[in-house]
Length: 234
Image (spheres, rainbow, N blue to C red):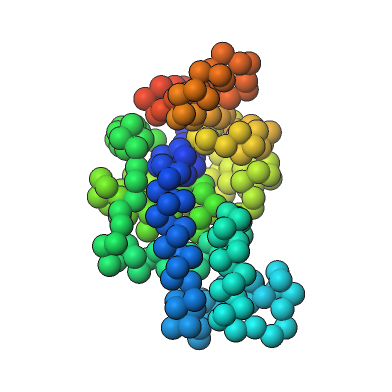
C-alpha cells in the first residue's frame, strides 16, 4: 500500500519547454558574469573545484570554467556542480521577477489534493535541492513549497540507478513498495521499479501516450495527474 509520493519535475509536474527554453538559456547567458562576480564565494568555489576535478584541471579561471559549464548545459548534462551553479543563478532571476515556474494545472490540483489528504510528497530531480525549492516557491500558482515534505537531488545518486531509490526509501524509513514514483522518463521508472517502488509513467504527449497505453508495462501509464491511481494505506 502506498504511503508516500515521490515525483520528478521536468516533463512530469511541469513543462520541459520551460526548463529548456527559459531556465537553461538564462543560466547559459549569465554564467560567466555570475562566476566573475562570485568567484570567491565559498559555495561557488566548492562547485568550481568539483568542475576542475572532473575535468582534471590544475589551472583555471572564470572563462575556462564558463566554457566547460556552457558545454554541459548544451549537452543537458546531469552533473551536480553544474546544477548547483544553475540554482544560484536562477535564484537571482526569480528574485528579480524575470520568470515564474510552469506547473501543469492537473499537477497543481492533484498535489494539493494529496497534501490535503496528509500524504507526504517528496521531489526527486536532477536539479539541485536549492533549484527545486526556488522552482516551487515561484510558480504561476504562487509559492507551493508547503505541498512538499522534502527534496532529493543527484547528491543521493543518479536517477537511472536503482540504488538511488533504495537510498531514498531508507532515508524515509519506508519499504520501497510503500512509495510511488512519478516520472516521464522510462529509464528512471525502470530503476525505481527495480528498487521495489511502485511507478507511474506520465506521458503528456498524446501520440506517445496512445502508442504506449495498451503496451504491457510494469508501470501505471497515464496522460496526466488526474488519471493517477493510488492505493493508500488506511
